[in-house]
Length: 125
View 1 (cartoon, one colour):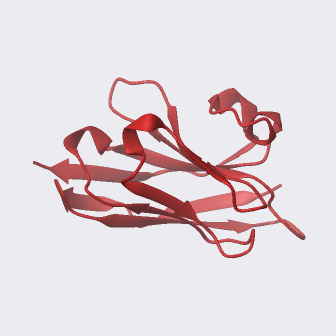
View 2 (cartoon, rainbow, N blue to C red; view 1 turned 180 degrees about the horizontal axis):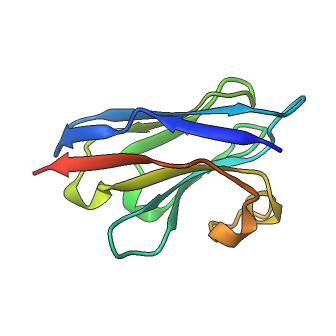
View 3 (cartoon, rainbow, N blue to C red; view 1 turned 90 degrees about the horizontal axis):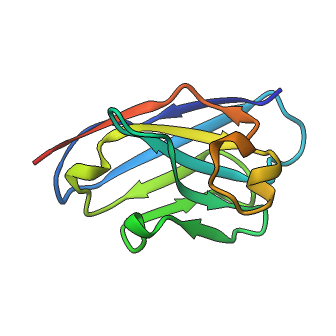
């Protein structure tokens, strides 16, 4: 099984930047599909960004142009560069990997197999 560990969360001022990282272990070869999700207080978990083994990326509309998901040649760490952060970006951010949903381009959490424990992001407005 793949183990995922997020880091880089913390407090950031509105308009500022933060970079989250996700390290993976327990696998051999390539982690083909990875994504970032977030869950704000009292909200459902939502997909934020996804990247496949070819480096293609997808973003939820609310973060397009502000967040960038990346990794080096389908390896880990996986990163999420968060720029122009808004108060509504405050949440616990989760790294997820693999699963039928990931391969199908879905942001439904149930379609992802492996999850990290999350890293919290707070935004000071």
